Image (cartoon, rainbow, N blue to C red; front, side):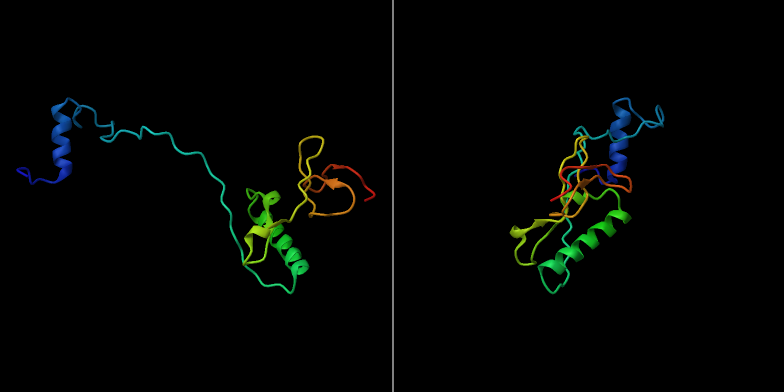
Length: 132
């Protein structure tokens, strides 16, 4: 440890010694960009806990919460929303139908709904069997 100067001065002296001094190229950064490509975005799940009198009321509340969050944050994947008892996440049930339509859209109605499937949005396309 013969050199007690701060590390940035040692680095600058080394960079000047190999011909990349700040005086020669002031706009070039001292640190190179990372060699590794950035990771692609991953999916995550938010678990929200709430109280309800029974499974039917819990499903209704969960659909309401999911639809409200979907209005506030359109990037949420509502088709993947599920509900389960707090102590049994392995018994998660889907909240929305998610049936695939003729143009590749997914049904945005609640799971187990009667009648036609409906694409998301006010004028969403309807398809399927209407008299279930």
